[in-house]
Length: 160
Image (tube, rainbow, N blue to C red; front, side, top):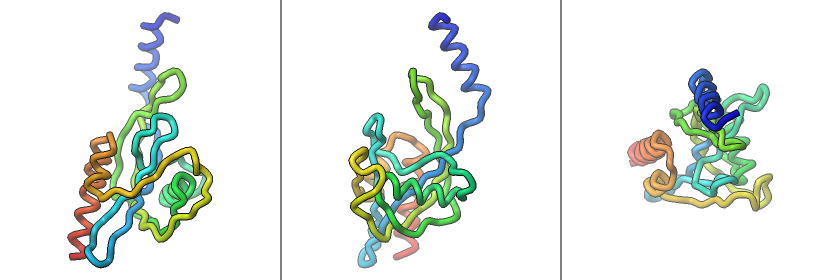
């Protein structure tokens, strides 16, 4: 197969298929004294860029349950996850051979109660707290940037 025909075949697949669904946790904490909001980001395993914990559907586990499970596996997070999503964002997941598929990621806020030291992907990722404005600057996806900013502002306004 020539390079051109392979590219054409991949383009046709991408155009025909709807985005694949994933679920994510926007892990946050809010300081009770000044209502400041921080967001926990993790690095992706392949590129090392800052992202929020996310993953594929898991059998009969509800969407918010998947988000909480991914937060635990990727960052050792325990907390209260919202059953209601705050929105979604889109990105292209690059697979083997540089083939990319479109993904739609539904985002559930998760208030972090504690972080544990030993979790499944420890050593495979870094995690770090950022104030919500800085967290929005760290991520690449425009819709995720907007979700983080809107969520942080909303929490601060409600608490004031």
